[in-house]
Length: 294
Image (cartoon, rainbow, N blue to C red; front, top):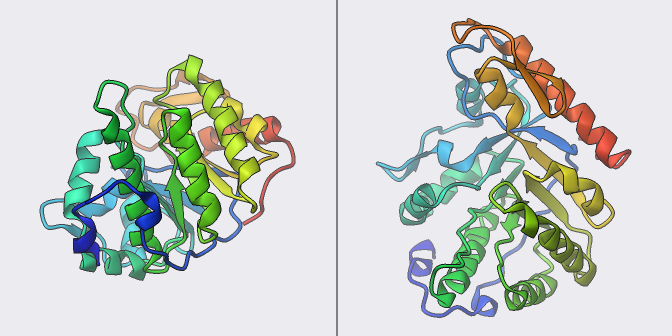
């Protein structure tokens, strides 16, 4: 099945096969994203739900997963055993293309065995300086990736990459018709500021058109969550606390950081926990009581 999907013969989303989607469990509003354990962490991260990046789980040389069990993932990333693992497919274009070529049937069977809480699909790009069909081709690739994860029983979030009004209309009609799609994802970080409010409205319009409540998984754009909260169930993936802690920077306010020690600081566990608490507090203040308990 997967090998048949590697060659895209047309750009019609409606020709993609139907699969039984799996609704994700209730998730907290705030989820930290951890890139690795690093040599400067000694303790395991004390969070009920933790996100890791899809590309970190794959050995592109062999086309197989790096980790054969969820316990290996816990150890590699320094996550407390029993935590729910959310996998983010957002990445730059080069690893995304490697991912597309690495996919195979055994690959997804291995993913299914990890008992993941949720996977967001890769975010193949929509580009203003490329032939128009490239956008539609990448939209279909995202749809294919959604099917491949969903068909092995993993709750899967469809990444929304659509550039023009026509693209959004087309994507919205497809999601409306596919009641198995119950979660979508979006990434604000790479958008220019002048476009972000436009996409906020397009997300709200999508939620209005779809006759069921969708879960929206967001990276970047924390300031826009309050506008989206009435339209979606929300999960925000936060990368900054981990990145800043590894740079020995401490949050003194949600968006203000100070250097606290030299780069030779041996352990950053307490610093990471502090950064997470400050950032989560900002999110709760921003969105109010719309927190979903795990």
